[in-house]
Image 1 (spheres, rainbow, N blue to C red):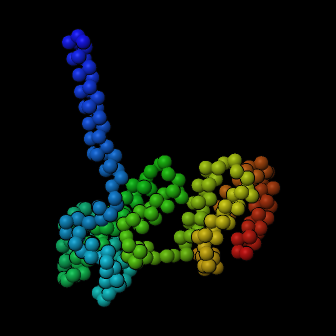
Image 2: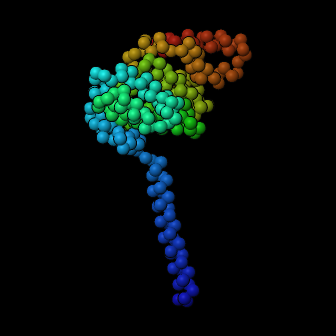
Image 3: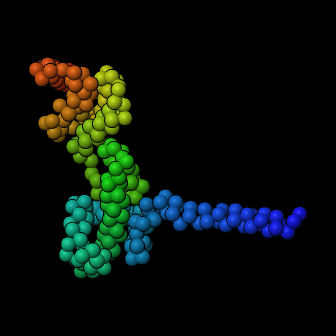
Length: 252
């Protein structure tokens, strides 16, 4: 084999190895980083030990001397860090040490770092244009499940009757956007099925918390194809009829 041909083959072989190496390096530095476990950024060097302890003993947060409304406490602390201390986390730590001169300061700091991790990742999700409202809500909810143990999650994000209607409406919006040619009977079917899943046995309490425009928004989404072809007079009577019909179906 000619010498030049051997050199060419050797050179090509080296190029292939180099490209494989660079591909692996890109994967390690970038792709793997994007799949980072949210839990890994839920603590810093000061909070790691207490955050790990809090995983096993979340009940300490309902003990004497701890804030009763943890979500309000964390949001207030976030505001102070942002506006009073210009984002200086050290100032937040010092403030907690001064306000809670015992183990509570360390526990609350650990909780705050985890909360801010959830907050930052949630904001990133909410700013994504490739996700629908429902997909964003679902992703943010899943993020809280990944970061916080169940008891801590329930303390920071207690269940509220206004939440299911928001999820339900965004779910229907998402379905209609992805299935623009679906028939109203199919939209209504998946809507009522999802409603049953979200409301469960608390539908009467949840109903009292629905916004006044909730069912009207639902009507517009379910029957948008039919309404589009009607005159203004027909639309009014049709909407009212479907509203009464949906109320009957909704609470049976």
